[in-house]
Length: 214
Image (tube, rainbow, N blue to C red; front, side, top):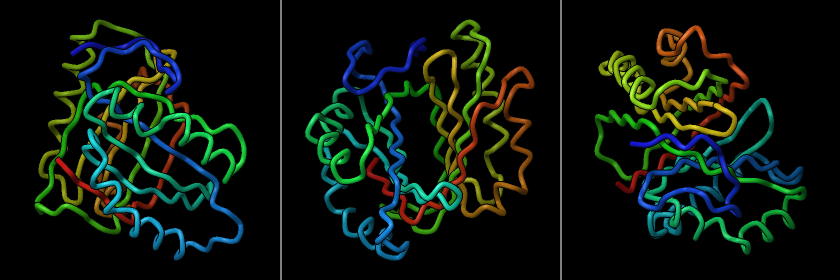
């Protein structure tokens, strides 16, 4: 597995096809749309997303602190992500929500899914996203460290999955999905991360729906 040193926007071209990609959308909730309406729209969209070629999973997200909504996606490869987040998608979204919304492509370095229930759609989960600035080391060393530390999550009550991806400028995205916020807080998550990593941003979001395709 290779590590790509730079994050790219979906309009750029620099990654090999055939590698898993993680994307995250964060859009402002319209002032006229209450939370229950946003959740209903998300639920209504599940059949559409279930049919998207190359989409492996999607965590629908609603951030209480920032008022943003969207999703965290795991794609089979870059082509699948680009086909969905195309120019038409950006044009439609920017017109509807304003601004110049970006959806970075993140190279998946490590994926651990540990789910007890074999369901296509799970409801009412919690996701934590930590973005670190790290010192670039050898690919083998970084992935080996991640894998050995992530092993400690197996069997932790409330843990569902861990996705780790590389962004631009040596940024590492650590995305974990939990049964609820209490499960996350009960686990010493700092033990998973290196003291050398500098926390740049932390995002906490409710996950009303989890779409699991593969």
